[in-house]
Image (tube, rainbow, N blue to C red; front, side, top):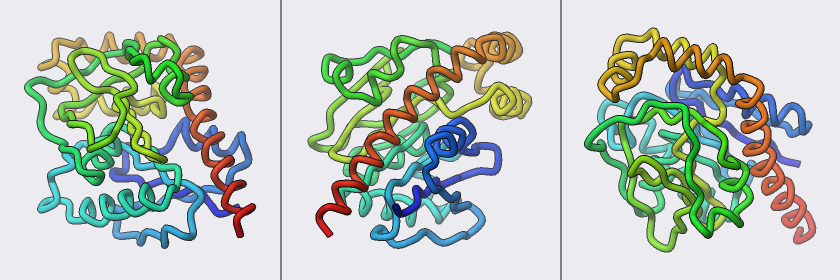
Length: 241
C-alpha cells in the first residue's frame, strides 16, 4: 500500500493523535514539512492525505507561498478520489481549494465543546465519530462550503465539518494533545485570541488535560473512521489495477 501523506504547516501543529492512530493501524505514513520547503509527492503515489492546522489563514499566500502549492495538491487529490482530510487550517484550505471560500470570522472560537452533526453527518462515519464528545475548537477563520459539498456538522454559528466526494474537512482539532494545547496557550497571539474569545486559557488547558482519556477515545474514533476509508480506497484501487 502507498503511504499516507500528512502535511504539516507549522512546527507546533504536528500529527499527534493522528500519527498515533496511523501507527496503531500499521499504516505507512510520512510527514511533509511544507513550511520548510519539503516537496509534495505525486498524487498517484499517495493512499491518502491529511492537511494539519496552522496560525495563518488560507488566504495568506503572499506571506506563506507554500499555501498555493498545498491547495493545488489538495484539489488534485480530491479530484483523483484520494481520501483527503483537512483539519482546522487544513479544512479551510480544502474548502478554498474546492471552490468554497475561507475568510476571517467576526470573532474567534476557542473552547472545548462538542460539535453538532447534521442529519447527513449522523450517517457519515467521520462526522459521526465525534459522537457528541467535547473537542478543541480553536480558530479565528471560517469557510463557506464548496459547490456540491455536504455540511456534516456545525456549532457556535460556524460550519464545523463537510464532505465533498473523497474530501472531508473538520474545523476542530481531534489530533491535539494536552501538551500541544498548553504550548499554544502560552504563546502571546494564541493566548490573546483565547482571551478575546472570552475563554480563560489556563482553565481551558487544565480542563482539557483532565479529559485526556476521553480526548484519546474521540481521536481514535475519528481517525479510525478516516483510516478505514483510506484502506478501503486503496483496496479498491488495487483491484482495478
